[in-house]
Length: 179
Image (cartoon, rainbow, N blue to C red; front, top):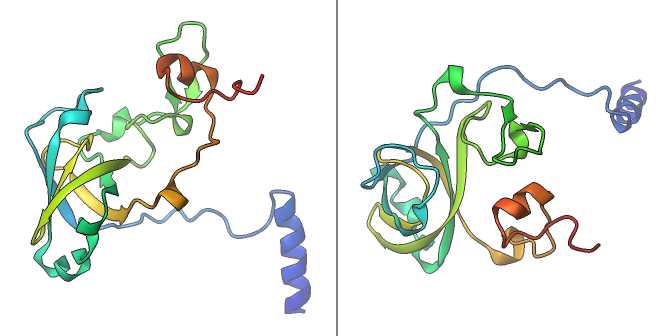
């Protein structure tokens, strides 16, 4: 009977039905580090020259072994200063001819769960301090995870973006690039 139930559930999933609903319980992620830099207010751009120190908890010193052998890391952080009432489901572009976009189709920090993700250059590590370049996080930002950047897994050369992103970022490959 259990096998039949699982088979039926798989068939329903093929059509976007069945399975367990998305859990509504909050996920708790304790910070593993904090950002220290000279930026105290969020800025829309100009982060490429900002050096930041990620100060890790002392109990994670061993977990950092070998991280300094990578040139880049992926940093996952909490956009902790985004107020709950500022979180939105739409994103307005600077393009007057474009309709609103869903917030999950943008890189805005005004997300349902205000998590930021950035690929940054790792400059050096000294004990529990990792210095990076280009992190778009303000002083005091909680870090919830880091991962080494692996070009074979993290780079997608054939990735494309909508035309409006291509206009805003001229180096971005458009989804119309093949036409």
